[in-house]
Amino acid sequence: MIKSAHSNTLIVESIADLTQRMQLPSPLHPLITLINYDISTPTLTDIGRWIQLDFYKISFKNNFKGSVKYGPSSYDFKDGGLAFLSSGQIVEVPSQRADYQGYVLYFHSDLLKGYSLANHIFNFGYFDYGVTEALFLSDKEKQVIAALFQAISVELNNPTDAFSQDILVSQLELLLNHSNRFYNRQFITLKVLNRNLIHRMNEYLQRYFTTGESIHQGLPSAQIIANNLNVSQRYLSDMLRILTGKTTQQHIHLWLIDKAKQLLKQNTLATSEIAYQLGFEHPQSFNKLFKQKTGLSPAMFKQNAQRSCTP
Image 1 (cartoon, rainbow, N blue to C red):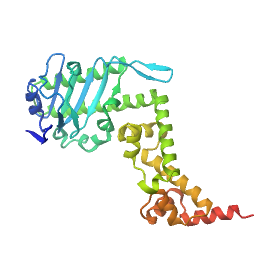
Image 2: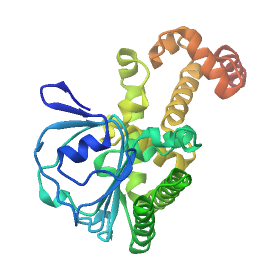
Image 3: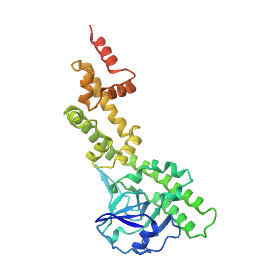
Image 4: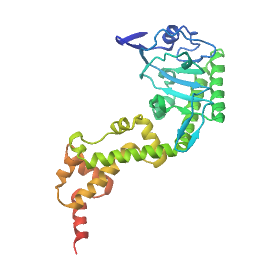
């Protein structure tokens, strides 16, 4: 069923509804379909409209336009790329015919019911990445992904039997695991670019806790930091975890504790005043986090700091 959330947003609940609206071949399976845009040309009736798909989407383009550049180096991944869209996200329908190339795989969450993948698909964070955070593929990686898409295509065209769904879900999970591996490679390959992103994040946190912004805005969230850096929150957290071993939230806590230690050593503010200055609504929350991270209460840390300064 297709609904309208407001005057310019379509909500598409089933894969069959989408293929019918785009005048594409009907899906061979109600919960998963693979479309080859090089063979099937969609009808572009909804250009410029916002659309919400109540199912997942994976796009595989054989010829990604442009190359990834940073610093003095350039990494050319024109041979292919993957882009992911989670169920329920709202996107604008592309207006260029060139956007419809390669393969697109749609699958509904109902396909995964009763399978372990249903419980951990949310661990594949790239479904929540931004469009500009697509997975660029080397030629070798493109061959791996192409083979997986081909295997899914073969299975979809086989007569349905008792094993069909088991095989499709296992093939899908293999595709997702390979994508995880290749994203991990991308984070490392683009280390220089991502190190600059980490530097900008640290600069932002430095400003946030030294200019008094925390007093007026409260504790900084991972989403606020990601917005400031113009990246998706999930991409930032995954990148930080792979390169530093810590998530965005853990980096925020490191800055909080470091700033709290500085203020406690100065011995000019009460613990409650320090808590409010750092953005906590309640001193108890600050006390709990500080003890969790340091093993000491703020008061005990302050006493120890005073003793070490006594001649």
